[in-house]
Picture 1 (cartoon, rainbow, N blue to C red):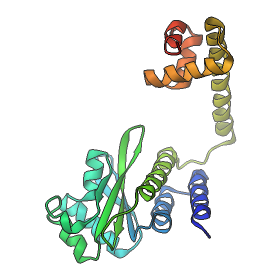
Picture 2 (cartoon, rainbow, N blue to C red):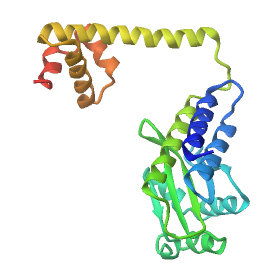
Picture 3 (tube, rainbow, N blue to C red):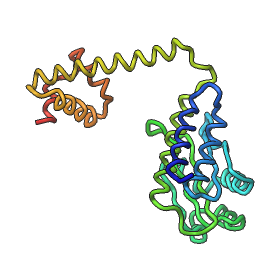
Picture 4 (tube, one colour):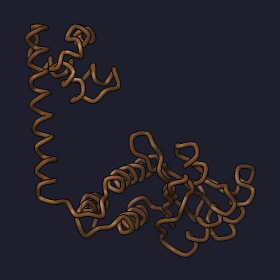
Length: 243
């Protein structure tokens, strides 16, 4: 099986995480194993923050990785700790040169055979809820492409984790969600028509103007569409960005 097929299966597996029979523990285990198989890490750990913000180990691929993660928590330092606190990726392509950053963790990692590490934030709506730790037995670190792939897997997993519910979806829940999407599309279509008529634009150009204004104003597309329909958003303002 080539990498593209593995990636497709991984994404399908993460999408299936919203099924009734998959719990969050299985979901995070899948993330760790996918990073092991697809990204090229030699060991992977996943930490998620508790209610009070304290990190907890949720998934690990082997015993050495578990020891490494627990030591970071005990020492209150390391790639995962920094990643969660700063909400940004932390790269350590050579742990032999990282003793000044992590005086306890860097030597400990080397003693257990790790020579490089990357920690990636797990976040939803700009809120970081944990960190994904990728550990390597050789220095140099992962490529930019592999790191982007790992971040994508982490992002998909985090969204699924946040949306997980211990209660199975009822048919009425599914129908209601679908209907909300249909209603939202209808509202966007109405708003697009209003823009087209007011600005003498084609429908594609009107839709583009709506999307551009939503992006620049930092608001959701459907929120802007509702505002136009309810007259709380000005057609002139929306069209000002398209001229």
